[in-house]
Length: 355
Picture 1 (cartoon, rainbow, N blue to C red):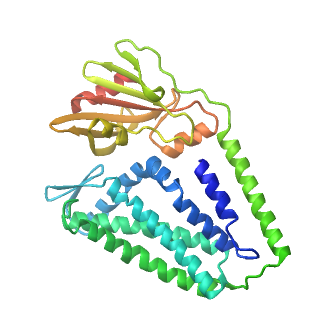
Picture 2 (picture 1 turned 90 degrees about the horizontal axis):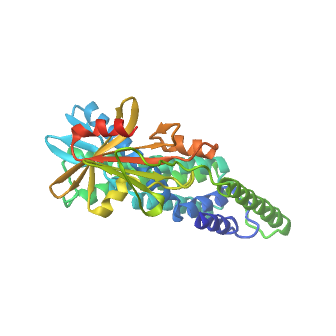
């Protein structure tokens, strides 16, 4: 968060003196956020849910075209060949590069045409840039599944790059040139002290308001964290980062409290990788009326079944926005509950026993 605040400060005062262009100022802010850890944070917190949606959308498009594809969570199966929509399929690096190019083209054409794009059009352009990034990733997944181009295929990366160029980079380049020529307002950069001082005052006010908002959101009394004591039949062990492990024959359960509403959770999508496991066949299911995520952990010939959800003792959910909004509004802190068993048939019973 400190890096985000520093980026905010740098971008706020990065304009040249006397530039009466709020659109360019916002474009610089978007540029700074693109280069900051914001995208990485968004990918860690929301990337998993987005990948599941992309899998569903890709499967829907293929089925609508008459292609007999089966959808199993983040796995698309066509003619017996499986294609997993993994983190790489979200294209975080390509997404960052696309947004970076989009803002660069916007600023370049503003300088070239000496025009100022109104604030609303900058926001609209940024929304289109993000939408085209998602669209190009979706088309990429559809083509890879349709032609069976797995990660080891030499055309796998080439198809992804071609989709990004055709469906995102070229349209954004043309859109930046057109929208500035059509809706840009002519301006002349001057160093009029009055205008510069007004702009400086306005930007200073923005920074102060932003810092106040961040202080209100982040510097607050620690909420009651989710706590589970000893439970009959389970062996309780404290681990790193304040996590607690519960175990009994055939079952392993981790309780991982979230320190605050903005904290990224230690999701099984990432944590089990440290022990050499690969998480596959991730899907959303309902057990005993409760939605949860379920996946298969693989390590060599070993197969484990794992499920996880969030709980604060009063409310259970798998929605990131839901739990973080509740914590921000003062509800007790949530924890990620991760239940792992050896057999598929044992998972529902293990979940019900824990609840």
